[in-house]
Amino acid sequence: MDDFFINSVCKTQRNSATDYRKELPQAISDILTSMDDERCFAHIGDEPIHFSTSVKEMIDKFRQVLFPGYFSSEKIDGANLVYNMGQAVSQLYDILSEQIIHVLRHDCLRYGQACSECESCGNEVALKVIQAIPGLRISLAEDIKGAYDGDPAAKSHDEVIFSYPGLFAITVYRIANILFNLQVPQLPRIMTEHAHSLTGIDIHPGAKIGERFVIDHGTGIVVGETSIVGNNVRIYQNVTISALSLPPNAGEKLRDAKRHPTIEDDVIIYSGATILGGETTIGARSVVGGNVWLTSSVPPDTKVFIESPSLIYKHQGMKKEQDHEYPA
Image (tube, rainbow, N blue to C red):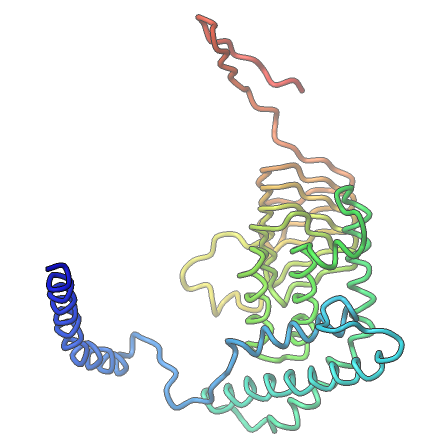
């Protein structure tokens, strides 16, 4: 009886699934029809860009080269260092040049651009990025030291390298920034958005960021495209360095304009602060307190805080609630 009941249920469910699948051809037809709708976007017949796995693979390979021995799958010592580094750099060059060639060819064919000799250009740019790695390692070493020196919770430089999401986002940004400055389309932004998806830290590859940049805790960070950030700047979670609200048609008019703030050297910006506007400058050695909203400049050596709030304490067992001013 139980078997009969189970078989009946299974047959009913199978028939139901078949009935629903019969509707798929019409749904597919509707989707195909929408391809001709000029209001929508499609990428049919254009050069493919294989980003889903290759960008992650490329970033992983960059980290192996930038931090030798930290992210390798095998132990590296004096006996195999030259071999391992040679292999890692060679593989990185192949992946990077392929990705650059893809995006150059994509834009050339999709937008009808003049021939840029994609193959030759891609290989040349990839080599320039590889050649920039020694300097990039020095910049990242300063970022690591900045994080370690300013965070008592960091027990070693290794801990910062292995586990700090801020350093991961900064690492990807610094690589992407080199590609951005070499005028590689699309790839730099896709790289930083990959880091954004993993860390919650959104740094546009076009931003100009100095040495010893520290993001403590991360999550909710935004640094816009035309931001300029000086040396030895530290920011905490949920800090926004971005543009003022723009009209719907601002894209073309302001695409190349400076829309984001300038943060000078030795500035600290605490959690929840929002700093907006291309004419806004935070002067050197200033401190911006938590949850501060700024759309105008601050002179050097200035502390900006919100006035202490009035807090209400509700004590159990008391008949009357009492208001207490938060001590200044």
